[in-house]
Image (cartoon, one colour):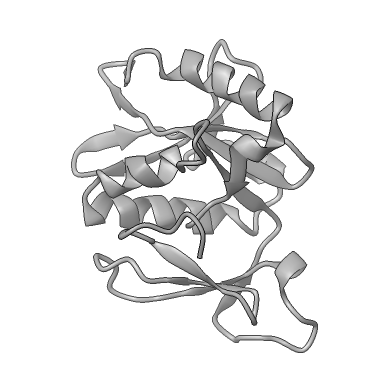
Length: 176
């Protein structure tokens, strides 16, 4: 699969349209079915039907910067990220606000995904787009003392969003 590196928390089972958790730090696996990729005859009793396609930001060379950020995190952080994302896949947009995600204050279009792991507040930043029913993760970040690490994460997210709007190839379906 193009773009897959040594760490792939989930992978596409291409024939069935199913995602499966394979993170070595996870204690169990879960199927995630995305309707645009499934045949009408496929069904799994423990599966989640996706409303959203998650996309990840890539640099000019096509490197998935979100995958790289996740690869630098502990297995516990990766598992919490996967838990957050899988919890949002089947939720309508109006149910995203709250403890799982929040509009980033001062940035009308940006959404921070929210989860805690290893005594840190993780805040990957993205936006609803570029197409309907897509959420693009633009940058991985941590909140520490009310500030982001990296400090300019919101500004980087604004710039990356503009890059995706100008060139949709700068976002691809995440390897989640």
